[in-house]
Length: 215
Image: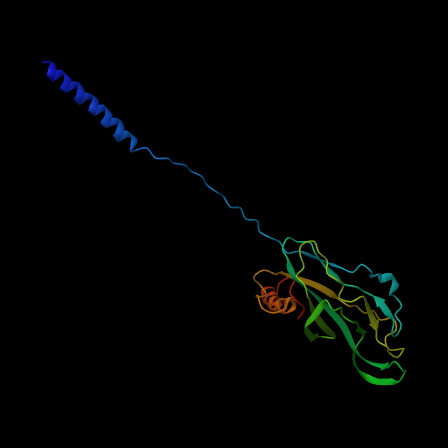
């Protein structure tokens, strides 16, 4: 009888040990975490400035008069951008004189001239009605908060023979455009070349819309 009791006790102990061992193999070290990526849509926004333009100084134009006019662009948006300036110069059939005073017969003439700065590249020139329209791209990507250099600082009225435009008013419309620099101009060539590519996309994107380029 004593021998049987020992066998029973031994068997019970072995079963208990086996149960503990089985339970241990089913426990895993686990953890859990997650991440949420938030994206903010950017914004392209610009401001056209002419800090030295004073309209009150230009109410009595004279032939060959130099006028202070200095268009520049400030990037007031979030995204870096290619920026452009479009200048519309009025034209007319007029009699002019050269620097030596020699008379030049009547012909279609741009009534104002200017000299662009080196930081800008002309990418387009076209005629629209009685105006000659020039478009220039800035040679640098304009970062948020930055302001471009001026396209020019002055314009010069043509040396017209007096009596042809008495009391007539003229305007030189200037428009500024911008397009994000990422994924628009390709990755080859200079900034000005990339800006020219992006400009064509801007033209197509805004065709017939407010902010479209002058036709």
